[in-house]
Image (cartoon, rainbow, N blue to C red):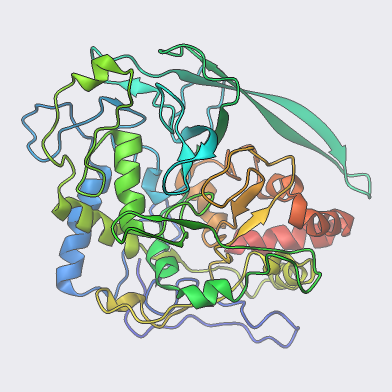
Length: 456
């Protein structure tokens, strides 16, 4: 449940040298909740005004409603497709949490999708869509319209050993695209599988001022520490200009309103005032003839409440902070330079429309910047200024509750890692030095790092 107004959680004394940022209030004083159940990611801030709480409740309905094919009796919730990936937001972001890849080659993508593009940039600097397919493979369609295709995911095992002889194995993903409705993709098509990320705490990240994000950027690695994070610059549809990117695996969306509207169109097939054209590309003749659910299908009032919903979803408190293993792990996390990208603390500034987000000290463990993660994790697909080797640092808050909420432990952008440990072992590029240092630790210290991450 949410913490009561004015409640603070006890922080263990730091006499053992644990970092000062090791604190339970991950989402700050206003957006930290003590829940540890399967609904831990689905709690609103306990400090919401009554009007905002009503809007949150309606936004929760929009997030969880299955959209219908138009025309339908459920006026206001029709307009699905004509091509789409899932019928609701929650179908991918189950209980507001993390998606996962299919467990077998026969299973469809349920909480995962594939971005696609061809080389070059559009008029606003974004990726160029694939002819007949667009910028995302839509694997479902309404009756009478062909789905665009299907993704088959297979894995091979790659064995490895730590320097101390401890064995491990990594699952290497392989992708095949079959049943393509409009023929083979161009030979130079780039594709990027993406699992759905968690959606709690996003309003806080939106409220971190740009200068705070940019102060951590070091694109030329001026300090020679091997870390050269840099911002993505993306197109803001409503302001009509290029701005800082914050959201998405490559920081390709500038704010939550645009993130939500873009996902509604690309994932569910819903038009909005921000994206009024149907998710249909030239050559999809049957889709072009499909009935509409109105103009727009996602009403502005629904989009506003949906955006408030994800803005004020609270963050679970960090746990077990008095555990010596957790405290040692926090020190090791810092010593290994993990905190150089997974920045432990950020501060929000003013937010007059949603006051609970303002002036909070938060512990998301992200810098919102792009980092080169090496060849192993590269997708080869550029996205605005993000290269095919770069990814935005994902927040780590709540990561230890993934198994409880989502009943799996699949991590990284494509879910290839089957545990937090495997996710670390996949790190390369700017994180190569940190990964090698982690591998060189004695087993008990590696386990302490994992215990710390499980506490978040």
